[in-house]
Length: 529
Image (cartoon, rainbow, N blue to C red):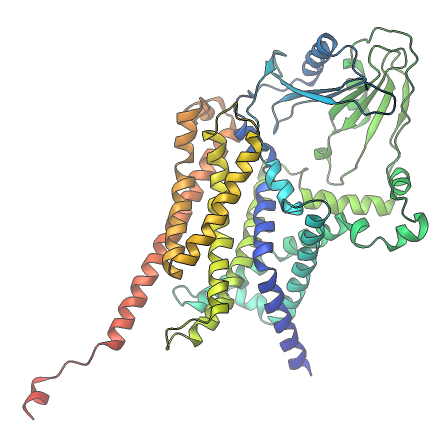
């Protein structure tokens, strides 16, 4: 009975991993890249300069700019720079043309030290990987549903994998290189066990994040279809005073920033929103940065009368269930992580991606051996081989193409950010065509070589097209820009090594096959008999 249960779990582990494997590989890879979302966006918009941080000075510059350019706006939103995002962003909402309409938002980026307007190139930056990770570039809500279903399958695959591999921790210390399928299985077990707590946390927390979407029964029973009332009660906000119609001069917002920072020990303000600027009932909402603590708190705000400085309200402490849910959300996003911990998140994410990839290779390899003698691969195995190549190496090459498009597309191109995304999907689609037309091993080698070339030469392209090259960023200690270039070089070298290993492995197989098929030499004694 026990052996039958393990066999059932092994079957479930195998087939759930195969059916959703390529989707999970893409979700894990883009989610891993999203841990450096801000740094990626910084690299993809090199026009925004890095400056020493001074929140009070930056807030003063932003307020001065808005008072000059948007004095009649109904709302201001100021995004203060931090160590990861150097830009000082300002947005304002124009007054609606007619009652009941929503005014249009206008966004500008400023130099955090001088207050001058900066014209960065249009780009989704790292936001593309973050959004693709859980929306899959699909219309709402279908992408989220599909990503959540994949997360549930991943959770099932993890549990069944633990049950199936009863010697999993023993096998973790066993690695046999150059043993073909055995080496792939050893690697699969090793990366699976090494970061197993991370895999369980990241998968379960993704389900908690979309809990209201996938398990809405209790909400529907209490609120019916009025989800808005539910979210208003769960995330209460201080009411915004109505415009009085009496003009008033808006004093400096800096004292409010200081008071908010003192109210949140160890915390800092990320956004300042001013409602009804220029009116006697102007209010200022100061929002705490989500990177200050592990528990993610949506809408952790303090609201002041922007004219008198009177505290109008603040977000109450969260109930224990909300704090637990916020803890899972914070652990999943990793915004609280220091640079060292963020790199640990990154490598754990890569390990999860590798675990999925090695599982797909193992599934195909086992079945290819059965058909190696007759030299004919069934259609279904050939289809899996094509999807393996395009779904893994092709995706990596598409990521590199996304970065190349950022540097090669004209800065003034209409819809430029969309064309960066188009370049990603065009290259990914071409990888499918290439894998379809080329023999399996050769397609692996060629796509690995292309991805290696694209990543390895990306810093050269960056130096040729911008002034933010390694010779400048290393001296200036701009580790976001320099780290991106260095990571691309390391990625290119790793992919080149993988292509070389694949080429060398094919040569060894060809030599062994030739030796088996060649006739035995006839000795002198045999020839004279």
